[in-house]
Length: 116
Ligand code: FES
Image 1: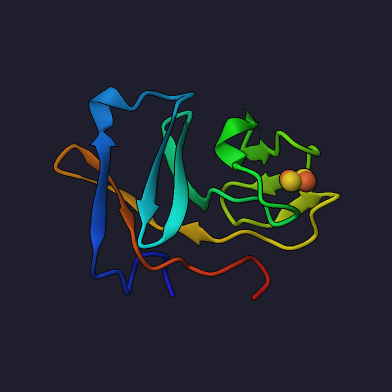
Image 2 (image 1 turned 45 degrees about the vertical axis):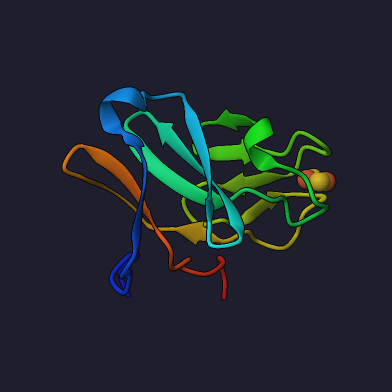
């Protein structure tokens, strides 16, 4: 299923004009913290908690299309949530993102975790 195909609720993150490449926004989707990144004009939304220990990933650094956890330097794909480097082995959830009427929006249906 295409990411976002079953989304019924889209939550406004920020106007696209105020969300430039190289920046991140955070919000809660339901009870889950979510981080949205603009990487060279493409938006990605991930659960904002490392699967290794309870660390806020948006405090880490973005390298290419990967987020590096600030605590122990595990890496995750922003596109799929896959764990790419130890000490994290479990993926993180990712969420659909779209731009509608000039506003970046995230869907409230996480599209699961890589490999599940
Ligand atoms: S808490 Fe993220 S790598 Fe350990």
